Image 1: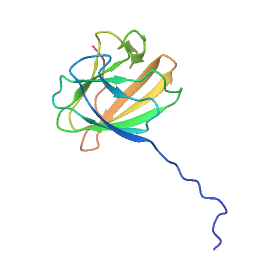
Image 2: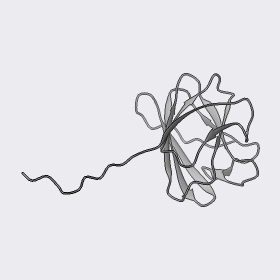
Image 3: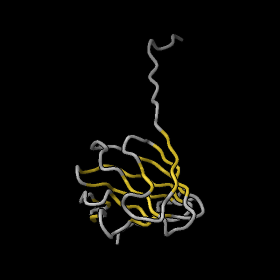
Image 4: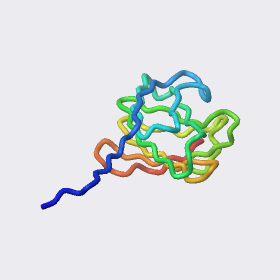
Length: 127
């Protein structure tokens, strides 16, 4: 059996980040990463999602024993699940979750998550 002439490798950017006490301007999820591991000391802590990712960008991530609150950059009018999260509204990511963010609009992201058992989680509606 002959080997193919070219083998394509998909290199992914990975990062780890810790949550902070404040909303927009706090811990950061960069738009260029493909996977992020979030460390959170309490479910009241925050992460901020970049608004510079290209349309169609997918960012996978996970968080352990404590969930966190996710917002978009202050004043950006970016949305998560069709709710403006650049002000007071937050998307609450539960503990022990694997999440997926998809830049589905130039002004917004779709967020879904899976439990640590692999089940699809209920819809997250920022409030």
